[in-house]
Length: 322
Image (cartoon, rainbow, N blue to C red):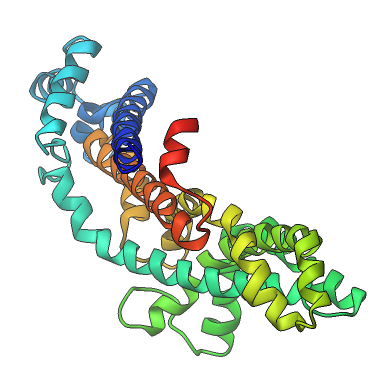
């Protein structure tokens, strides 16, 4: 029974993940359907004024795309094809939506991965630095940085970095996505709010952990502050931050929309902006389902990592009490 409990827990989480993917697909379908205009009108206009489009051409395209069918029939038809891996084609280019997303996905994943690593390192160091010094004024000054970083808009950070490091100092290119140097500024832009959020969560959890009785016992045995922080407090304090990993990764993916636009990078973010404007439902749904899949996988991975960090946490107990 004890061995079966983790298996049942993982199986139930996988079923929940399937439900999340279905819900994300369905909601994106309904939301995009309520937007004014449709793919047929956009395709008939060809990037021009939609008011001058021939209505007969629009009707013909609506019939070709299946947009003249009832909503429930469109949904079932689209869902059935999506279950087979066919999300449809871009009405503008005729290319499969899945192919268009996978073409630009590596650029976005590289940017998000670089920003995540940078955010974790900076957030970790800032959280420790804001709780380690003995001087109260220094702790307060360092503790004020994360809320400031979280409050600053991403586009403003990007524009500020462009102004100083691209136009003024000319250390990094201002546009494009060729080479490592072009990745630095977008990654920093994307990492600032995420790193600030990590620092806020971890520093708050560290302060609570450092005030617990067992920490006082560790100090009473003669342990220094470095040992108290890294050998005892961090292991427990990091758990609430790990819980938010799925949300943090989702924020990174959402932030690529602004970052890729500011730095003119090819990626999923810019593709989504264009797809929404063109009423390109297939491309948007591929991106939405992918983002939901990332959230499901990251959340499950965090649950599996918990017992490795804290041996008191057992998946079997979580399955019994969840």
